[in-house]
Amino acid sequence: MKIKQISVFLENKKGRLAQLTRILKENNIDISAISVADTANFGIIRMIVSRYNDAMQVIKEAGLTVNTADVLAVEVSDSPGGLHYVLETLSQNDIAVEYLYSFVRRPSERALILFRIREIDEAIRVLSKNNIKILSPEEIYEL
Image (cartoon, rainbow, N blue to C red; front, side, top):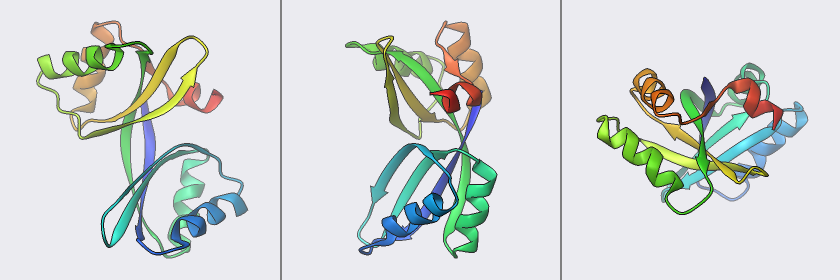
């Protein structure tokens, strides 16, 4: 149920994001989800990609700084309060969310949200117990 996310740290300079996506394109690695956060000096690019291990290797070979993290892909009702229900469930069980970002919308009127949570195994237990669907890596890559 855990999804491997890569985080790439880039100088906040013109063309650096294009450099990263060129590396992935040249190695036929697809980006399924992406989030870009920046500060004055650098950006953090968080991605879910096909061929995770290959992506890590080619990014490192290009001299870029890359790290990994496990995230959860959670299916949320695409209606007012859908995300709140998941966040409230986690909060009531003393589970903190470090960050989240939207993944894709599906025709079933469900939204997919990626969650970074330190207590990931406990979060899986709590969310499953509350009938909140957590997608597997296979389900993510089939979308």
